[in-house]
Image (cartoon, rainbow, N blue to C red; front, side, top):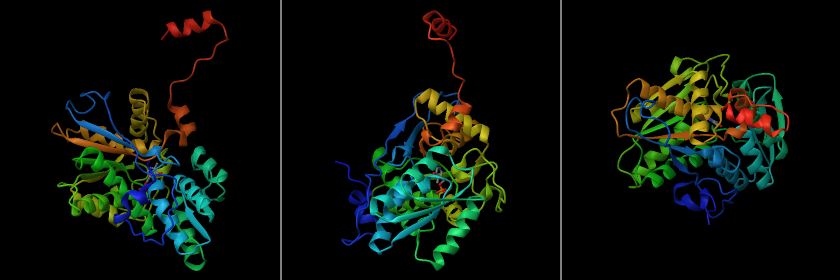
Length: 353
Ligand SMILES: *Cc1c(COP(=O)(O)O)cnc(C)c1O
């Protein structure tokens, strides 16, 4: 029986016999091979493309990998309350694990800029949700100030336990493939996850589990690409709200992951993100949220540039589930057909294709 990441990877995590295991059986997400992307779309080449569907974690995003550990360590330290800033998924995850641990949870979100599913999760899971008139970067600054002076444990990815837990994603990919992929594509927002994956791959190599390391290929949204542009973005803009971040907390670590692995951090437009999200859903049956599709958009972009030689293995991390942002999905999908409950009329529509 799968009982979560602490039991599976205890040796690689900063836990002791005194650390409570606050788990919702996170991790062990599927690595799914893509079948229906044509060679033409992949730059005329045969590539082995897999997606790591992190949307199948307990709260629907990869944030659970780090949150189980951040909350377990907070409980071990005797914390009574946790606090975070969030574009949505961190708050959904923090609220769930805090509820499990019996801790109070406070979340600061940018008012009007988080996806419906995520807001619903945080609210129903008992968090005190505070919507601020500002963006994610403003919310994070406030959380840093408050948690420095008051007895709240901050569970943003500045909390080192978040990164430690999230590195297990790399372990799983290597176990599922039997080796590291050649390329690892992922979205970059606050840059905690790219930091975590690079650490995970390096530790898995040091443990003798893999011989080679992947190149890390990070993608920011074009309107929120501070690392690519080389300066903080004051007013980040993108439909991919989970990566709508203008001043990433783990900026330097993301650059280190890029440079040490020989990868890139580049940007993809909202249109490229949307096309990738639609293709994954309509052609492979895999429904991820917009930010997650930035990884596949990045792969398609590099393939179109002639970046690959053929035969390489690439893993794209799908960081969150499509149901997180139903408004966006409905907005980009083909419209539905409305008719009377009359079989002749219904058949007309069916026959029109
Ligand atoms: C948090 C999040 C990201 C960005 O991850 P960072 O660690 O902030 O770079 C990407 N996609 C989804 C769905 C997220 O929830």
